[in-house]
Length: 161
Image 1 (cartoon, rainbow, N blue to C red):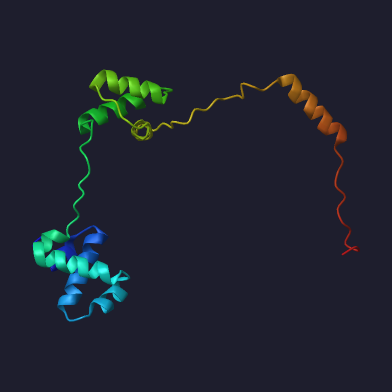
Image 2: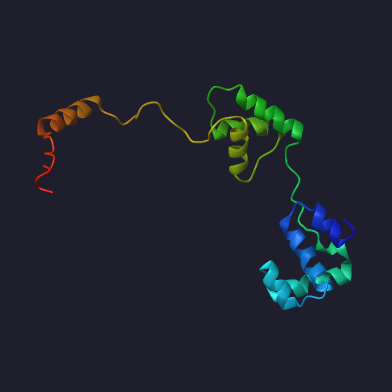
């Protein structure tokens, strides 16, 4: 993007647009205070981007962060997601082992495995169909106790109101 107008009209990032607008409004004769009030930013913000624009041009207003390269290629990620979809049940550890064995990739954070599971239509939360600690005899005894002590609550009469 070579000009302020191009940034304002073509950028998909609000931060870049705000930067370009602050410089453009200054060039159109507004004071830094007026620009900061219009854009809801600080005066220092306006000054910073004005100086950066004067030094580097419109390219200086672009975001500097581009992110990191993925450990898995798009093809490898798609193959992993397809493998996950083919499984009936799966744990995070099984996904980790699969990715490590197939692609020699080990993520530092479990969030990457959670994302893969989610993309494959699974949850990383373990669930069980039945409570393993449930004692059927205790449940029946508690139900009988509740039935024995159960009393209907009397409805307030309309005359009491």
